[in-house]
Amino acid sequence: MTVNFEALRAANIARQQEWPGNDKADAAFRALEVADEVGEVMGAVKKWLRAQRDIAGTTLTLDDVADEIGDALISLDLFVNELGLGRITPLHLSLSRQFPTPAKLALEAFADAGELVDAYLALDAAPSDRTKQHHHDRIRDAVTGLAYCIGRLAKLFGIDPNAAVVAKFNKTSEKYEMATRMDVQACNFRTKHVYDACTTCGVDDVKDCMTETPAALKGETNGETCDP
Ligand SMILES: [Mg+2]
Figure (cartoon, rainbow, N blue to C red):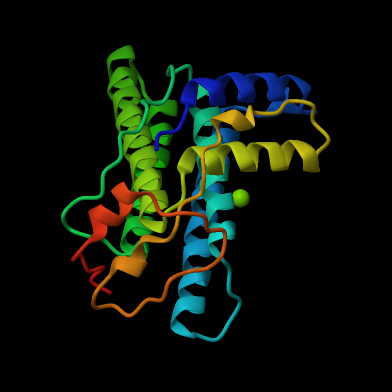
């Protein structure tokens, strides 16, 4: 369950060549885009939680969360590409023994996005090459942390992050009539929500967007609780 960042980079570069106005999207714009999309992940998780807890207000489904996870990773790659930082390190995700809540994992991602923006601003104002290198390194760390947090958030929800990226990339291409598409063969499946293994929180199985839960995922959550 890893994101194919190589395929994403190639697709992003191809689509940006056909995206009107792309030449005016500088690094500051790309940083704003990441902040915006990570914020949209926060909003989607919040609205999903409303639905789970019967809190009044607008609600969203896991499909919406997956959409925003896809957007966040796509925009992160665009930012990294704009800064010439190479590719994002492939994610090797595992759920830790501590089973975090969606809200806490989302907030961790938000904190990493804040660090990324702070480091970008510091880089932009850096007076020397040595200082620039320091802030480049900070940005690399924040990018890795952010991608990891979003990947773990996806996994917690039983969403394949690569599938989310491919699906959202192609949905956006279709919406704006762009020819570039990602290969859907890279899109595996969207797995079942893992909270159905939670023994104490009472969160119900989520029935949207589900196929089969892989045995490995079921095993990882046996006996775990999500500490709501
Ligand atoms: Mg979005």
